[in-house]
Length: 149
Image 1 (spheres, one colour):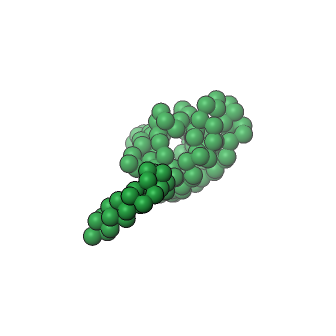
Image 2 (cartoon, rainbow, N blue to C red; image 1 turned 90 degrees about the horizontal axis):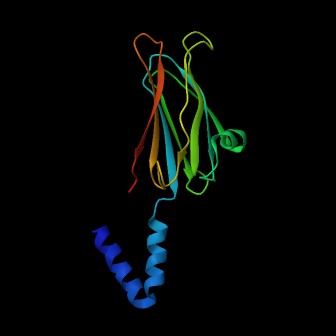
Image 3 (spheres, rainbow, N blue to C red; image 1 turned 180 degrees about the horizontal axis):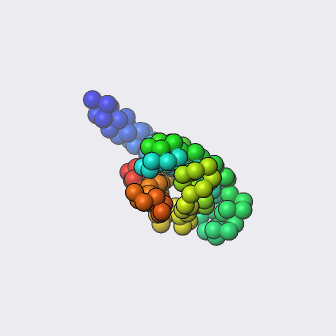
């Protein structure tokens, strides 16, 4: 029923105000956030830092030096998420994540820079998943993107 109402309202706007009003209405319905999800599939806590920036062409060194920093701690089996306006998150990197086996001792992992338009888009969810082998000698972070469209 709500869909029919939306179509009727959209059609009336088009007839009364023309294409510009319909385009403005549809533009407001587009997603304007990128969601970042951190998932720890391991048996130990993970501590890390990620950086994001509003310049999709930034290089890794500048991103880590001047980007917005967000530290995180995930319990074993834990997860966390946050959302950022698409204009503010154009590039993102996990610069340092470490598996906390004994205190601060454990393997580390990083990612490459992910960029809007290449690896993700507005409305998407970027999922960083942390895991390790049974031997606990290796520690990996994998990245997947879930389309919001």
